[in-house]
Picture (cartoon, rainbow, N blue to C red):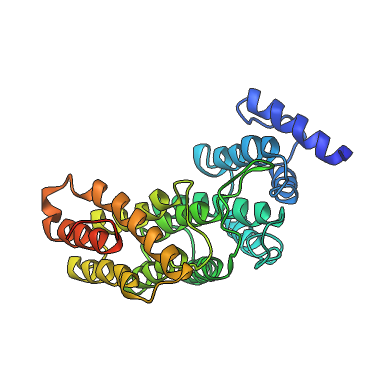
Length: 281
């Protein structure tokens, strides 16, 4: 363990005990730089339990970073050393850098959603980066026995939940996000089993709740999602069908409670039934 890493662990443990208040002579910019250096550390204690809470506190709870600092941080988080670090690789620790770069992006987008400060170009940059990330991320593992949470799809979904609610997010953005969701559900390799389906459902649940797209368009997308059930049988088709079925079940049980969504609920139920080869017709 390097001296700089050991010192960061000790500093973050102390900050946690002291409600993240910096001592005399300490600079927030220095801490942020060190957090970025170890954001993908293989040890979940540092990565998940110390670095992420510090970002959460300084970005959201205490609003410590200026708008200029947040814009700069956003650019770093979405660069080739963070969100796209060794993108396309599978089964190695590089996934931690990518996926834990997504989490503070979600925090910054929530901050912007609550009190807009990003320029349109900044928003477009994040949107394009996240759409690219969902398309190019190949390591879709959830919880790992060595290293803890990777959860790339879930963390990316957290960003999209915030992004679709931003004032710059028009109907074209919503459609791009729906396409990205379908792409990751129909990924051809991985059946999600660590509740990624719930995190993805949160995006569409938000779209419905906020009226971000016409209900008929969402119903059509839901019907299209289930069309994978009609493809020739193969492992790729099974993965698409099972992921879609589980996702639609998550969404259905959230929205069925709301009597206003009768038509959408019917579309969800029909799509779930279509994806379920064990259903009695």
